Length: 221
Image (cartoon, rainbow, N blue to C red; front, side):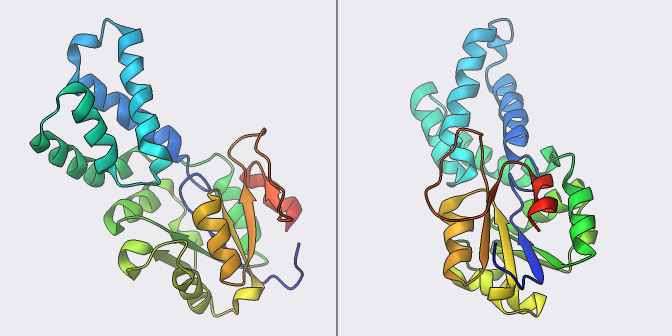
């Protein structure tokens, strides 16, 4: 771990909040609304739920992909697809689930470091998540890609976080779960990436600090 760290920037989804739990809840409600005839067919219902979660790809791509796949396989109209995409953007933040130790960890780290968030997503959704997770008051800096007009892994959004923290990138650790956006972007920006592995079986051959749970940061930092 690099010495001289004075600030920490966090990703939001699947780092401080459980984005997959939120997606699971949202998708199940959607399936109940679209396929009420399957409420007494739990296996068939679960089949559609799991397909949607697969098509969601951990939120890494626009929702139009998930709903277009649904339309192709189950005959949903384009009008319904458009309405469902809007509904997701309007309401997904309402399903926010914060990781149990997230607030305690940030409170402890805040005693020693400047702390902030750099998150991808549209502004109303990400701001709603921050409101509901009860963490927003802890951060000195919150940079949302939908407001900045650049998104991770673009180096500029990381550098914007550094500018707002008033620290050089080399004095900042960036904590995130997605290698292709969080880790490589922070690395290219000159920060110290810390990778939260999604599961215990995940492997990494790069020499990078990595943890499995947010509370492990307290030992690492």
